[in-house]
Length: 424
Image (cartoon, rainbow, N blue to C red; front, side):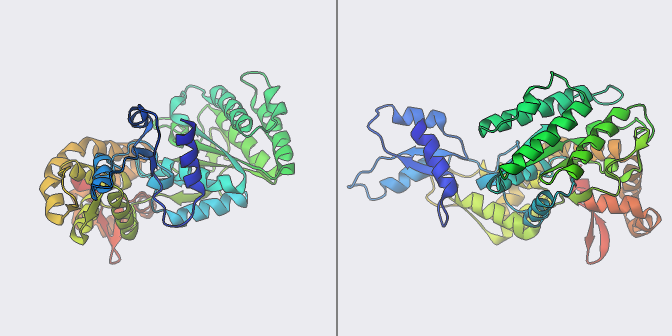
């Protein structure tokens, strides 16, 4: 196990044309294959090395036996590292935000890849000595229940865990009581930031699924939940009083950055935090994702197939990978060179579109739930597609949000509904 783990750690430091997720291991251990099969995952594959000099194709057959059973497109959890593609401009902007202590909000549809962006950002920033803590707000109570006690305690605990992994001191945080007050956490983070600054470290707190703090049916501007505004005011205070701390939020709705009031108090993030959007993949990004992952599974993908994959999914990251995975599952395992053609993609499109309909409807229902005005405008656009331009002019703010979410797309300067609406 130590050899297996060390080999993949070594791969991270290698530069050049090195396969990032496959290694050969030779061992005298008679149970090597059983062990490696047990430890391996699609993104970290260890092949027991066996070579027969008399079988010139033995090595190719060994590779095919292991590579062809993988489906690197089939990822339902956030991805990073060797399986993350695209978003270079967004990642560079976020990296600059963190290093310049700007606070950012990352927004987009469900399954658009926001959490994957944060995972990759955390990985990229590790080389800059940035300690990153990712908090998923979906697991906490939502207003009108008060989630702040749980969030404050989780931030304290998770930051301490990251410090211990790096053998860094967090004495001020460690001496806090369980479920500290917002002010106690703020003071401890300020003390910690000063200590980390001496050692050349930065601290980043990422809050995902931010819409669970501003749910539908709750008065976000004047509702009786002032401790949420107080919590963000405390984080903002640490940013302003430190030189190496910042935070970012992520989710569907940008309301938490755009309202001047937040639960009866001045919104500490209003006109202060930057909004970044995770829309559909660009065509070149999607092509690179498909061809690179396909090559690592021994699959060639024709240009026509790449075009069909993109058109059918609208470039939405989850749908693109899901359709590619559906096609890969139908390819024969015993061919030396497997290939995806346009005809193969089109052959399986109808069944796939039925299978993902529920997922797409949930994405759009989420828009209705958290963007009620935009949801109404979207319904009107679907009912009267010839009037999309006029509706966009009548409701420019709603149209702007729909474009940012990738539901409304400009084609040759004219607004059109995304293919997501067809799939729903």
